[in-house]
Length: 162
Ligand code: ADP
Figure (cartoon, rainbow, N blue to C red):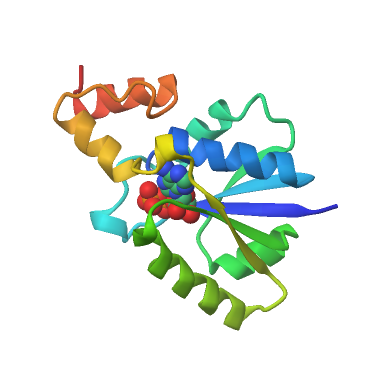
């Protein structure tokens, strides 16, 4: 039984995140999406950890081997506690590489039994990020298609997009 962990802040989850989660779910017996509370990231997340978890749960309802849980500890400790042996990260452009390379090396140093693997973003989502989506919504642009519909509605409600 192979269990993978897809960690992130997911503030909010985007179609790019969901593509990685779906592809991980097709490769492993079980995929756990770990939602970091991340109170310090960029002045604090827009959505509460409970909202971020609920958005992903709704968007992955069709995937029976995917579950979603919040965490607030070291990533390798969370992986160990949940019985996950593989950490899956999505890679967009080269800009992701340096940060991901550093995190993978540090996590390996903390626990070499937990492997980090990367899945390449598809070209369509290569430039998609949660921060870009929030920026678009904040200025009244449409985020339809970039995030699941229920997340678009929440963004419109929270940031006042049309
Ligand atoms: P962000 O980097 O947008 O703040 P997270 O911290 O929630 O997002 O990222 C969680 C994981 O999802 C990271 O491995 C990140 O590289 C990956 N990811 C984010 N956006 C995309 C995308 N559009 N396509 C593929 N992977 C992505």
